[in-house]
Image (cartoon, rainbow, N blue to C red; front, side, top):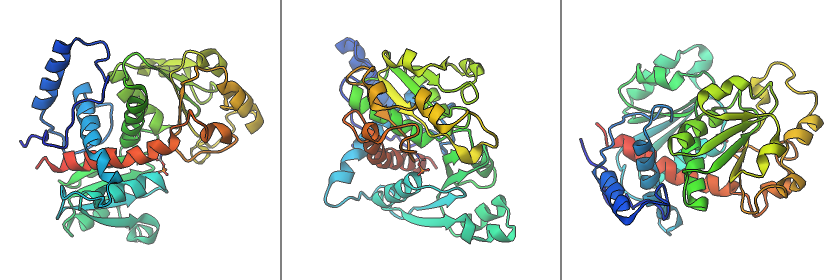
Length: 341
Ligand code: CP
């Protein structure tokens, strides 16, 4: 098994994970990280990953981050490899970001568009994957409305599989982006109060954030109406609140999520105005939070619903930084998976 600790792996960003550790403990932790060997062939979710694996991806991404600011934005790490974007749902950020990430690693990229493919003639997912595989693809990046579709593909092919969002299940690279951005802005994850607001019930982003953040020691609170944030979600390891104003003042990070109307069949709150009044992050509501609270959103934003434009574009917002960090995270994921035969 090849070690993946070359020049692409810097030490943890300053203060990360060991904010209160002694120099000896920090040295021991850095040694452990150096000895770590990445073994996974697929990235299907953050629920299965250990804290050590999460740190390894974050550190590898930190090493790739400067590539995007150079005049020549390319490294030869995956030269000769082929990545296919197999998207069965729409995407702006994830698809573009995986394409650019693969190109910056010098891989060839194939863009598969389900609506213009033979899927419309009835071809199965398995046959689609096996035919593309036959053209010599190394990595499948898949987005699908069915939870578990990426897991199923691992049984159809022996190539690498990355989950780019499966139904309401997981969106692991978005979770990693959010954690990376918090770490960059706050210098640590452990002990932070992260409040995730909105349509938790239908959100793969909320689940990936929860698994990743709690493994790294953050406290996660889900907030929203009872129809979108059932009390039963406490069993997943989050606190649950239906009162945003009550949790706002202790939050270090507020991650605002969109109400996913495309996944909701019935009326889940009385009106949009009612939702904004109770759960929208307006400038007035933001004034009740800590002055340095970090405002996040995975996109796409429904401006004026979950987030006022002046908050989305204001000084506390890291929304576009999340998008920029997506490149480094996706470069790290594609790179690490492709090191494992
Ligand atoms: N955050 C996210 O997944 O955005 P897209 O749907 O545009 O990819």
